[in-house]
Length: 257
Ligand code: SF4
Image 1: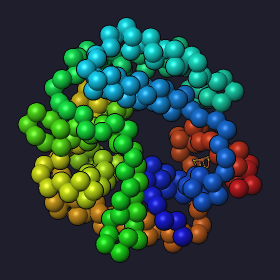
Image 2: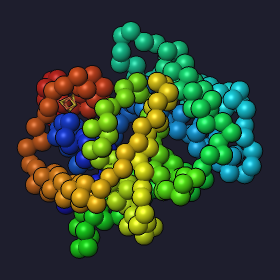
Image 3: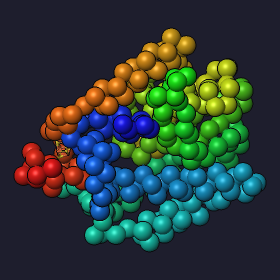
């Protein structure tokens, strides 16, 4: 029985049970990654490094930040491994988008002294229940104490789309991280969930009531039960199949998985 779940694995099962089976049950090795995931990793690394410098009292210049990003992008990019799915966009488009998002963030928050960083790329591991049957893990991009004393959970997004407020108020990823931080840090005050949409240069936030937190806890345990009881692993065709790294194994595309 699978013991630990993450917001990504829970979302994967919802989008396509077959993909979940390939990734989390059979654990098929993956030899490629999408350009979107590649850019996301480079941007997250650079922001983590930026805040580590800030924590030591040194604010790197925007030029240095962008130079670091471009160097890391070019050094790590492997055309054999990283896939560009869209026909209308090339490597420069993705590289420039990452740089633009970083520049937007830098200009908005420079000199980065409006709040206090409590954690960066912080792994989190906690149970939803006292019997410890439902374990969740994840990584929080940035944990912050704001000037007004509120604990904040920040998430950096490198995609273009900004979800509507209603979607954010139901977002599972940061909602679960809030449950985890409240439990692990014994936090009883207000916790603010904050998203940074780097490319469109927008910020969004959400506050959850105790009732919403309880509903999320219950929904998540039910969702985990559904995954544990699954046996069919039916493939679910969608636009996302173009980005799926298991397509060659998928029965909908001629695979024998
Ligand atoms: S190709 Fe599509 S249907 Fe098949 S496993 Fe991947 S996401 Fe699911």
